[in-house]
Amino acid sequence: MEELNTNEYKQFLKEVISNIENAKIQASYQLNAILVELNYRNGKLIIEKQEKYGWGSSVIKQLSKDLNKIYDGLKGYSISNLQYMRQFYLEYKDNPILLSHSLQIPWTHNILIIQKIKDFKKREYYLKAVKQTGWNKNVLLNQIKGNAYEHYLKNPKLNNFNETLPEHLAEQANENLKSIYNLDFLGITKPVLERKLENMLVEKIRDFLIELGDGFAFIGSQYKIKYGGEPFFIDLLFYHRKLSCLFAIELKTGKFQSEFISKLNLYLEILDETEKEPNENPAIGIILCAEKNDLIVELALRNAPRPIGIAGYKLAEDLPKKLKKYLPTIEELKIELIDNEINKKR
Image 1: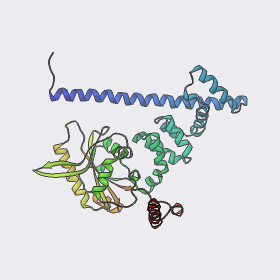
Image 2: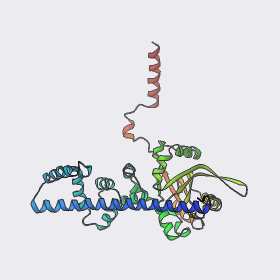
Image 3: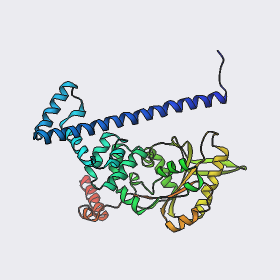
Image 4: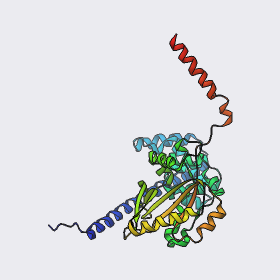
């Protein structure tokens, strides 16, 4: 048998694998849509029969009991889930736009959004965000608790993707960029040096990948690139599977400066020149900074030739004042430690 180790065959194999993986993803989306639509129709049926025959909540208990006998106790037909189906229909029967979005995300996410979010505009934001970013249920809950929608309204996304990328890529890239990244999983409440922040993100790279969203794969920190014999170091380098491109992230613990863009622009040019594969899209850059003036950012982005987005980040908030009064001060802790040491010696 002829041995195929050529670059052409490796590229061919990569494309076949990509087709298979994309098909699996599409199949999971279609199955999810079928299941959510089924729950919607069952919820509609429950409402219609209750109204027609004057049945109360007891019919749901009986229905759950009978379905569990037939389908061997599947969780999908518990009393609570049947009640959710009923609520799901009532919430979306007059809102086809939200219903169409809900068909594209898992059932458990839909229920969480219905429970936590009552405003339809906010619901639309979270429904679309789950579809675009692939948040799991816990991440979705954290985003809701962290007021992601409110941050979205206050902090519009700042990038030049429409000017530097083809239309279909610009839209996808914009969907994968946030205006604010929540770094409270690091457990720090005060600004730190850029290298320390970078090291802490690497130590908790799994949490950072979840915050970045679906599709990101970590390549390395202080990633070394060379051009003309001169070395350069990218703070954090990722690869995005859906966009098929490299993502360079630069961390800035201070206020945004226009020169940040020229530096990152150079890195992106070198990545495209030396690292990008022929079948991949141009590298994209993100600058994460503690503070930014949106007007200055917009002006600085106007003439940037490479696709760059500017975003902020927030750290963990300090302990609320109303809780601080219940905790000992540093001085009180010192006194207690001294007392403990004295008691040990007795």
